[in-house]
Image (cartoon, rainbow, N blue to C red; front, side, top):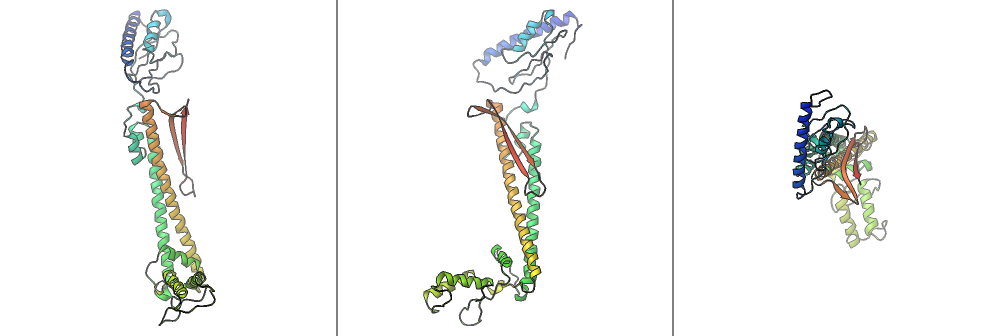
Amino acid sequence: MVYGPGRSSLRQRTLAGLFAVLLKAGNLWAQSAQSAPPVTPVTPVAYGTEGQGVVAIRRPVTPLAILAPRSDQGVDTAGVAAGVVAGVGRVIGSPAGSLGAPALLRADPSRGPAPWWAPVASLAIPGSGQFALRQQRSVAYLVAEVFLLVQYVSAQRDGDRERTAYRELAKNVARKPFGGTQPGTWDYYERLEQFLESGAYDRIPGGGLDPELDASTFNGARWRLARETFWRNPDVAPAVSSAEYQRALDFYRRTAVGEAFRWSWFDATLEQDVYVQTIRSANRSYQRAVNVLGAVAMNHLASLIDGYVSVRIRRYGGVQVAGFTLDGLQVTYQPALGAPAGSMQTGLRFTR
């Protein structure tokens, strides 16, 4: 409550008496605080502009806002002394014609208790630690987490849908003449976009294995690579029973495509182009999902660091780094259209 000029002298004497009581309590508190461990300075819990006579208490005690009365009314010294309270406050000003009065104000919720588990909670669920610390930016962390998770689910769903599409296209067009229905590996479907045909696995059925000779097909390219790797002259075949021929044949067996996975895009080059575009779109979707997961991890890490710094500041007065005090962390996330996961910026605020 604020009292203006023109009030009764009885009220002024009452205020002077209250100031004296506050001064005595402040002295007792200061004497007990000398042997107590240092208390972390926090942001003033009472605010005012210069000229309003506001005393800002800077220790975690009962917040007070004291408007010092005019000095010509004989109680200004008591008001100033009560405002100092053993050094924990400062008098900003005392306007002429105003009377002082003690007043209890609500503490700033952002300067409440600092639970030790807040950083752990922030790591598990971004924003939960900031919520426990009564910080408004907890909403930003939570919104970023939900947004990123939605983006991840969307990218993963797109990738799965496009993967099904290109597999169905390969089965219904390129593999259909050979009756292939068994799903292949990731490398197998990449080979379908690189080669028009797989070629035969056994060029002459019956007897021994006769590899494909057409190097424009996938199997033919495998046999060519085997000959260049293990034969002295890839164009001159050694004896079938020789070690170098058998090593080349073993390589072909391991890497060539069998009859169950044979394919051909012959007379279906348009479908192959669609297949190539679909598989590349699936790759982009899965890469976008990986990028979003990285952003999710960064959001958890940023929330963890923010929670740790906030708890550290409230409990111990900040984090010292090379003579500077880390007293704040700012994290912003900017979603961008067409970008895999937008951009996230983290800023640290230091004071000397």
